[in-house]
Image (tube, rainbow, N blue to C red; front, top):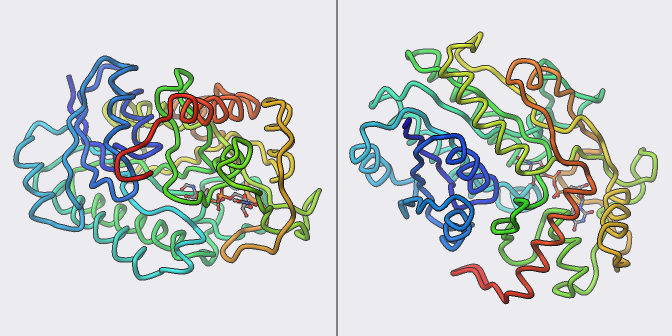
Length: 347
Ligand code: WQD
């Protein structure tokens, strides 16, 4: 079995990707310092796959500790690098924390990948690299505009670091630009585990609906969109996860056209915040307590993907609808309450 190192493996997309990798015959190890995640998610992965994944509690910003993991596993065939802070609003408040964490961790992983000649590298990028696009949907060749947040800027720099490093080696890479990952694994054994008050829309909705939060604020109702709220491309986290398995196969089978092929991972549908709330209310049967508040710094007005390239070249397609995204997100919130799940170091 090919061994894949997943950094950020206890995180939201990382954990769902590990499930998909195992179900598709890969051997997986994880590096995650649990600064924004909980090791308990590994239990959920075991409940789904029967596999106990080893996680190294290592801060990737520490080169020596990171290097030691590669020394212990000289048979690593590929790396999927998720580990990063990812809250747009927080990055506006704490830019240096984002630049240091997201860039230094990537530099250390790339240094090790180079030293140990790891052939395949998948980088977790983001639609935030497009900034506030003038036209939607965006394709992979849509020119980048100024990132609207330090988070988005770390992803722009990250893509360039990967491209220049890979380009000077025999390695091959894929850069996956996620749109808005939401929902939970259909088994409801794993899902999104926000730390503190959720920044992202869907956990804010489900936590308000279940009573953890008194009210949800819609950040802005006066945008030039069909109902005044921002437009995003929501995509089920399991669809995102499977794209990583397909990206590894794409690299292993030598199909990539450049040293760093780029793919948009979005559903191709743009929904407003209010439309997502409506979809949640119809799926859950609950009326959401929300009000329209001021705009949030760092938000783009509208963005959604043209996903033709990933569908054609990765042979990938989205399996989950917006309603199924809301259904699994709500089921996960209900499970956490009903089973009184408390995640180590997060609750
Ligand atoms: C979505 C919309 C908010 C919370 C995310 C990830 C980022 C990247 C891109 C992968 C915006 C509005 C939110 C709330 C609200 N993905 N909102 N009330 O900012 O698009 O970024 O996708 O890399 O990592 O964070 O997602 O869910 O924060 O916001 O009105 O309580 O929902 O203003 O319009 P965003 P989000």
